[in-house]
Length: 601
Image (cartoon, rainbow, N blue to C red):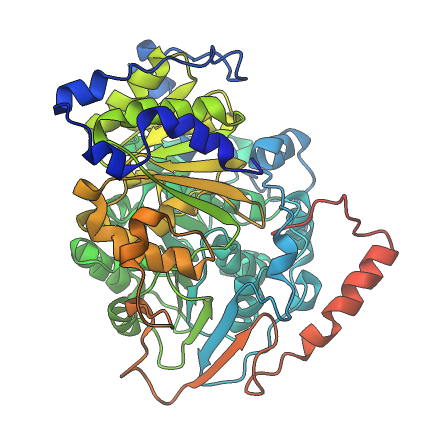
């Protein structure tokens, strides 16, 4: 993994030189077959596990499926005091190794400042924002603080350091930060913390499930305090898993609703009581049309995750209905939060229609940028030899959890079949699959049973899967599929919370030239090598310019503070950061933190 020489060797048989290919006089069919690929060794000898056959009989009965929406969560009993007792079996499920994303060797870069700044911080606000330096500075509820320890979250990331106090100040927030930087924690941690001490007062009546559950006798109307909306089913279930961990040993009960799964089972979970509702727009709207099942009148916080996606034209009607439903609630102090790794000027203008005039915009690095510890490699590939190149790549590098992105659903199936028949442990997922199949594929990938997943862009946004070390763009995204923004979200599935990762992209002039200019600028911004065949797209100007970060014409009344690393300009009081090094030293001297400890968010 330390050198890309092995990758170059792996791809040599499929010709990585467009000039050499241009000189090839064979026709297309002959070109595809004139170098028959011969595997260097058996996948088992290379370290890959046995492939797992697909069992169609497991998906014939929806009632027998372990749906994500019915996953176990902490169920409160009336006799509990302020904090519920431990449930060791549930702790194992919630905080097991499959869900612990260990921080990497580059995590320190997310906290340090200096000459080699890993990121910039920009705050746009009409009031002074005091960031926190540690979770202990943030006034986190003790129950949640204990849950964060179980999650091995001990240091807040930059987006969390600013969002937590902004939410405590009662502000609407736009949060923009790179992929893998802790945006989910940035909204869940302060919201859950603020509600934990008030849940008994604020929550709607609910049945005592511990005494038995009869939907005909005990069903209540779900009246959540928090509504979290996201564009994909997989992201919704992932945030639900995070909420289950955050709410452990508290009265707060999270639920998730999404399409493709039985509505009856999700309705039953809602009718057991719901304080935090996570879901996709269509299914939330379905339940909103059933007022005896779901009411938004108590909602205090509405969170839009991957907000730039939901602000697109094809989501506009659903988005307006969701936001209008939130306006009907009885709480005048309703807060709106929007988060994404990419948030262009047009999306910000649309967002301002729903946010308060004094909302805070928190930006960590440039919107649409990527973390620098993703090693990006762009490889010129003959279109007719891509499958062989993919197999070479997987066989040459050390086996690791790998995501392979393909542009079409049909090609997902083709590539999956090819690799599976070559003996590699693959699974796959796309929008035409049954929801049972999608959830089964995700479980197999998370557990490592099938460490290679072939997928479309349905998996590009927000997914946080432990130890994804390699992302492969078998097809680069076209302009109609999101272009450079989609590319950024795809490769952001690796190198999370300070880990390093690889991102390999197959490039071909005939298909990908429309992406080349933006791709070169992103490589340059990330200090990555620009391959020779893309040199002609290198911008002539000395300073890189990006279209998605202009603030021209936006509110001129806000205070705009720009900085590198941790130390904003004098417009914001960040004295907490002056003590960060001292606090870390004290924690290390006391034995609370050592170099071998797991730290993270």
